[in-house]
Image (cartoon, one colour):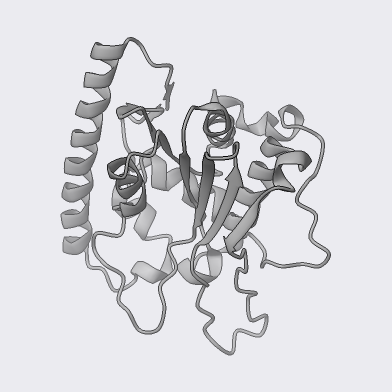
Length: 253
């Protein structure tokens, strides 16, 4: 369905629910785009019941380029589904603080795995570069029985050091290189929602970002192998889910 991505503005709800009083993000902010899509999907009534446990406060770029600005920690939005069930949405800009080095296992999203292990009924990953997949998962998370957790990758031009015009491309490359697979786990059953039969090289994703400038070609090759291994495990789990629970409608890229 994402082959229709050019028509996203025409197919989304017209109502704008993300209307900050003043600019709160820098140009190309993936987190702002993700919040806008989520708000459009949820609608004003549900948004009014939400609580930002970790506020959406992305860094504003230094227009003169005189200092390095670190992105803030990922934002966390919680929305009550009823008196007992909660939807938690993490807007992950992969922020790191101080002089901490970027881990070579940067693609491992631990929080979805933790949510599954803790028995959350519906867990999913999403990225604004694949808007229809994101919107569908927000809707599912709202209607699925039990608690729900949605983990959204939000490319950050400031923290990741790439040109602001590349935000959507970077997000899609994260998925298309299998660095950030899009999947959901419903009642313990895992399904890939976007399959990538011919992945782009991980190196292509990394070389567009200044935060990976210190990584050598050998490092990239090591990460490529690790990504392939992790994806094979996820794909096997998804195939098992389809065999045991029937066909699952996924998007083939």
